[in-house]
Length: 286
Image (cartoon, rainbow, N blue to C red; front, top):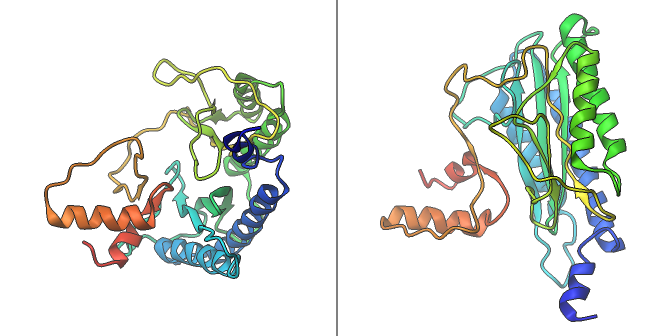
């Protein structure tokens, strides 16, 4: 076996060290999720909750591998997002945003953590109220949860991505709900949050993916989004995009000194994984 082959072999789940890092990242991000859920109360500012989630991940990962001879990158793999009601996903506002949670809001939380580039992501739906949820809110939560459980049982060696897509749509239909179009579940690799193998939530003329078969020792982030509506995302308001990821396959020719400085900082702090513009603003770059 060549050195390259040995290195590649060590980067999947056949390596106990890799498994340990995945588990460590998963433990931290699940604790962060519990913290965020507790903070979801009426009149709480969304940006404050997002910042607390990210800060917890940075603190906990910062305490790991302190004495390692080799530098181990670790921290936030995907910024904490709180997407409320009709907002589908990935809302992580700027510090100046004054949006607050209200009683009865349905909040979709998603966030990610990594240790040495091995990524664990988590998502959860929480309704801001003390009592049990009923009606359509209960239906859509049950649909998403059941679909996720079915998907996890189908992401197995020998099964195909289409098997998952077909199954989760049938589950949602049983609850009189729809799986939201355009949602992709990606294979995860070291420092890669959007791998080439993809599970498409719903096939349509505008979005298609290659057929793929799951293999031994692969890792996937399964993302299930259900709706009581048609499952077709629509633009309801102009929320500013705040989450970015550098396109590593592109070259940037920046003429302005300020632009080159900003890109240099981003390249040093967030060379591969997604980040929120809040981190950049903290650096007083804008």
